[in-house]
Image 1 (cartoon, rainbow, N blue to C red):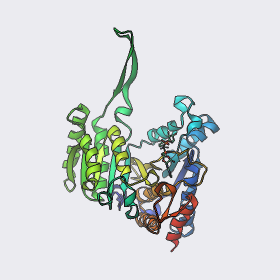
Image 2 (cartoon, protein in one colour):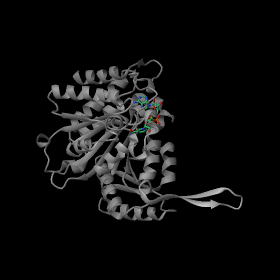
Image 3 (cartoon, helix red, strand yellow):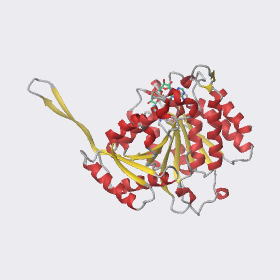
Image 4 (cartoon, rainbow, N blue to C red):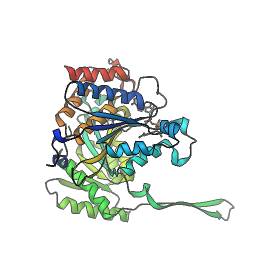
Length: 387
Ligand code: NAD
């Protein structure tokens, strides 16, 4: 189980001094259905005196475009900048397929990541004991799996300039030709700050870190490795390993339990974290966190917590979506933004226990188990906490 990261042990913050302001951005599709279960859980925790969360809400994605003509309004962006943690549902759907590119639902998510400076994406892949059969891999390979991928989120080839398509005219066969360019750029400070987060995370877990890059064919990989090794030399209590990203993908499906924390860039992290995700069974089970730099005075990081899955338009409105990824994302907020480690462990244990009892949403349904809708699953988790 994940422990609180070291930077949250910062002396300037004690739990009872911390404000607990959440901004809930449910978004589109199943977003509002699964967020309702988080709201129910927060109301329960507040009522039982365990927390004192103050909740604000806003619009993001297609619903924000419908309301304001933008994927997130300046007013809601301001709220996101002021709160202690953003809890985000999902955005997108066919209704908005033809809106202008800069106003598409995903633009809201990208603006949040950029304006909050969320450079570290944490993607745990945990295999709940009751679900080891649901993985595409053999149960003995995934049972007890608990790994964390730390992905650099704001740099690299997705954002590097130039990013162009150039017309080249016709070739000798009269066929039109174009040239597409993406640019992979990393500066030392970007690599250093993500490496530091990853080493801090490893220290709270299995004390083992792999850095994945392609230094054999990419010069940006050479710098990546050089900087990560420098950070490793300042963190000698953590076992450090270098791995080529393609080998890492292979090892993730061959023997995933050899890993504890993997740190990697934006592009490889996108692919490796989805590979790791699938080891655990279903998209409906996977939470994530995105963190920014620590505030110089309070030590608190800007943070956003969201399920890995999208807005699932195919099942939206049917009240059958699995709320566990959404609830587990909120649990990451308890852990990383509010230092409520014991409470986070309690909610994680409640999820594990509900699954052990055989309750399942449709996406993780197995023979002999009881099918639950979104609300029933949320209620069952709260009932376990009440016990
Ligand atoms: P998706 O994750 O929404 O759905 C993929 C499949 O998984 C679907 O069959 C869906 O029903 C199922 N699924 C997803 N979450 C589930 C849950 N909680 N419970 C049960 N089943 C679940 O991906 P997609 O279909 O490729 O994309 C749909 C929309 O979501 C698109 O508009 C896409 O751009 C958007 N999207 C948004 C995000 C985000 O907001 N972070 C991420 C991925 C995709």
